[in-house]
Amino acid sequence: MPLTVVVGAQWGDEGKGRIVDALAADAAAVARFQGGPNAGHTVYLGKEKFIFHLIPLGIFNPGALCCIGLGVALDPLILCQEIKDLERRGYSVISRILIDPRCHLITPDHIDRDRQMEAQRSEGKIGTTLRGIGPTFSDRASRTGIRLGAYIEKLERGDDVPFKGAFADACLCLKQYIGDVSLTLYRMLKQGKNVLAEGGQGTMLDLGLGTYPYVTASNTIAASAPMNLGLGPKSVDKVIAVMKAYTTRVGEGPFPTEISGGLAEQIRQTGDEYGATTGRPRRCGWFDGVVAKFAARVNGVDRWALTKLDVLDQLDTIKIAVAYQIEGEITEELPNNTIMLSRAQPIYREFPGWKRSTRAARKLQDLPPQTRAYLDFIEDFTGLGFQIVSIGYERKCMIML
Ligand code: GDP
Ligand code: IMO
Ligand code: MG
Image 1 (spheres, rainbow, N blue to C red):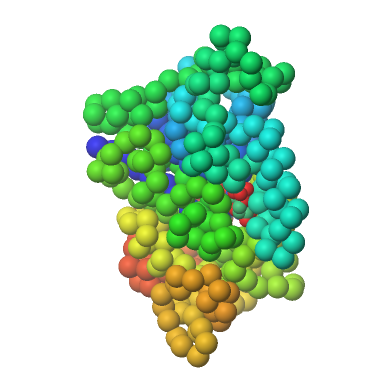
Image 2 (cartoon, rainbow, N blue to C red):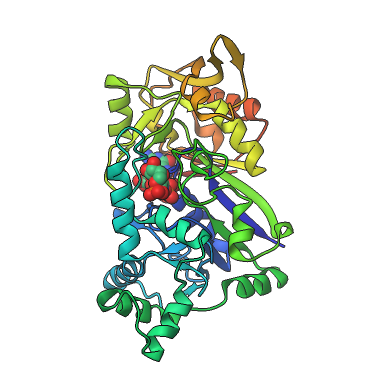
């Protein structure tokens, strides 16, 4: 059963959208399974930039049905706006989108509560995206949430509902896209069709395994995909984890390989590291091999997709964390305790920069020897190979292996 799950291996923004867009060429469906409009997935078609918060990145591949699985927190206003924007730009979404009626709705009340909770957390601020994610998933777990299908039924019956006006209109406008994502994907997989699951956020933001409480409110790891699409665990065929050739984090919480000053600013400018959802400058740091090994383990990764290698093109020296020193002890394993992680001092291995553009490379052999040494090290260190190496934001700037 050819279900491929694509997840982020770091703290989000690894370039998942762009990798899914590339892999979607031979997929019958692409499905978001968790998170919500806290995600911002960017792709460029030529010079034209698109940022998606809820629509899966199958949308530019006409053969792919774009599914929103039951584990997604759905803001109807944002999704309708996204659909309208696409149509305004000349892309039809009719018959291209399928939304599971079991999706929980992000209401204006959830967004207010997200804002209030952040304002109250003076010291322990999480730095959420203020999209109402935490309150929506807590209401879901408390059995007080509102599901899209049920809300539409109430509106159609004329029942009294708490959110009317533009919110209710947006829910009704989504009615035409509602269908059973679980059943549809099950049938596709039975017929041997390719299905891609597109993760939001990243492994280190996972509610259970991430840097709690500085995490998101959903499970971001690969095992979350079948569960939140309504499929069995054995339906997963392959796991691809996306990681940047360095690391970024937006929001608060520990980040052992974070760097500051001129070098961080250089990476931020070269990599255009500003949040796709909030516009916040992203914190930047070196590639963290300890995090990569952890992501490989907890996701059951088969292959890596490495992005933004070109951002390192002009650096003199490039570092990779190969272990942490924590309170005098050296370890290669990510601590299972956030306080310990915040005390971790990375132990680096240094690599000479290649100091030339890699953007024109289309096969590994086109890359400078120093670049290949950097890639070989990551493969050896993590014990996993690359499926994709990306060297620019354009669709063509990709080495497929
Ligand atoms: P996502 O949330 O994981 O989909 O990632 P984002 O879209 O939030 O952030 C990734 C950013 O990096 C986007 O602006 C992409 O256009 C850009 N990007 C992706 N791959 C590459 C690459 O290989 N090189 C460069 N320079 N930019 C890239
Ligand atoms: P994509 O899919 C990066 C971060 C927020 C904050 C924490 C909790 O584009 O990779 P939330 O609003 O989810 O309650 O915020 O998680 N965060 C992300 N960081 N990329 C994302 O998504 C993120 N979605 C949430 O910055 O630290
Ligand atoms: Mg993003």
